[in-house]
Length: 264
Image (cartoon, rainbow, N blue to C red; front, side, top):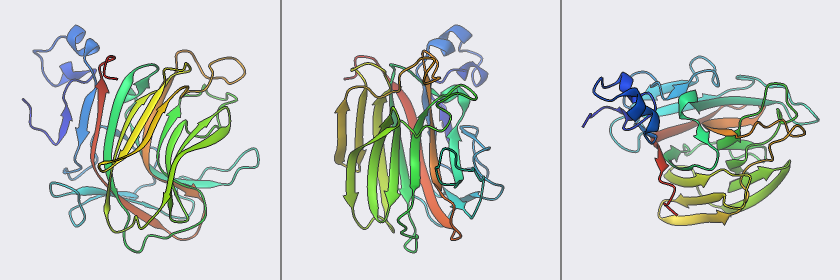
């Protein structure tokens, strides 16, 4: 078995890593990808267009496991996005999963990752999203400003898991607490679906936070502009309202794997 910092265990396109695996085998394989952020530069698991130059650094002072983790810093107006329809302007520094790793509708996936807020992390009563799953929207579609279908938010010292469907936000979990200065180990199991068989399960460490069954994706029609079937992409880092004060977060031990359909 390969022992790489970046493990594409059975990923579409794995044939590029091993000539002994055929394209047909690779195409039918389940996604299983891991990043421990141990390399000097960011791995190919991530796209780089959602953060400004220098916003993501690989460092060895703060880490969950191994000897390194990603340090992500957002500053005023980094990757600025003007608000539309009366929404606030935003800035971001996020790791966006590579396009070939996006989730398919009605398929099961498990995500796990660890996050660390420094002790001096600013606690502010404004929008801050630290992880999010978004439904792909057609360019210029009515859904272009929709909120993520699933998100982790940290606002005014309260950790929240939210669902946003049909431009209506539902809080699946919220808890105030002392979250800075300790590693937060998240795990999510998801099935994004326009039907009632959608699923969201979430844990923080050993504590289960969410166990939801029902619709987990927006309708797919000309009114919403979502294509059918939909795809869903994952991002994590710092996405917030524009503010002058910088923020820094550390991320380690990321893994995404596709689960068999009979898992639940």
